Length: 114
Image (tube, rainbow, N blue to C red):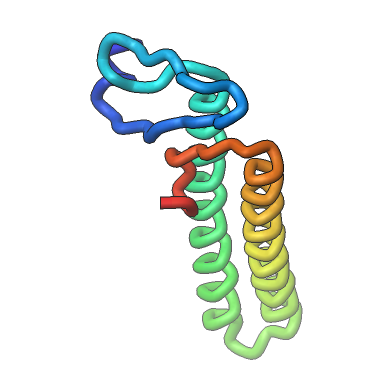
């Protein structure tokens, strides 16, 4: 696990209220902040990929509906759900960023903060 964590630059974590943060032997920062940061970053990437696949599926279904109102309606529903998912994802990222700023945490490994 240490070899894998040392390969990826997970960013730095700092909290002015706590002071210095211990680092591991490979130079990466240890602590719950880093773990949470990597988990949130991973979920963000997975949600983004799922959103793209869902949107592509809805678009292809809509284009190939060929005038069939039932298939076109299902495709519109898929596209609407994809847009709702995008709005939820952006709102979640914004809320997480605000909460981190309130607590004075700097999680540089989060993809939308780099």
